[in-house]
Image (cartoon, chains in turn purple, cyan, red):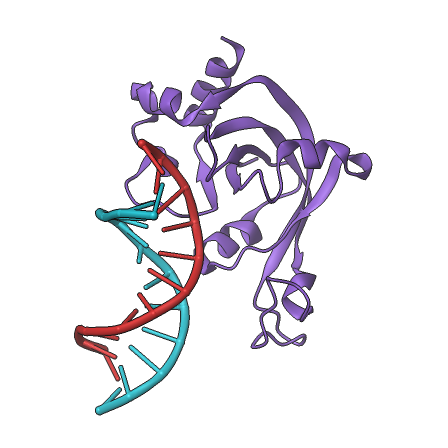
Length: 153
DNA sequence: GCCAACGTTGGC
DNA sequence: GCCAACGTTGGC
């Protein structure tokens, strides 16, 4: 059982978009960074992830998703119409992967980036490291617990 | 819109 | 393999 954090720009795909999907399941595709991709490939069925809204008025964690399908080839890499199209990727050896996520819960109120920064226990959270741009990152058990407590406050 | 930080690209 | 140039991310 592992914990993760997934970033998304709410204008592109928000937690409310996910809530409206059939069975509230959606492929987490479009990841085009090798480190993030490797994390996707390490995910196991049943792992939990925070859903984070980035590049918006109030960035922060808005809910929890579960990994319901482990890594498989991201089909957008082969679609010339997609903005995630990668002409160099070969079907015989796809460069990029995605997982399926299902909505577990949406927080009543967002845990803002500002609030996260105020928690001394979250000092080492990758998200808060200067210049961090990873869109998929691991979270430790204790970090997860600390953040969950903040959610219920 | 600004800008720091970082990843990727491509010439050499 | 080095590294400058460039593009992207993302908070502010």
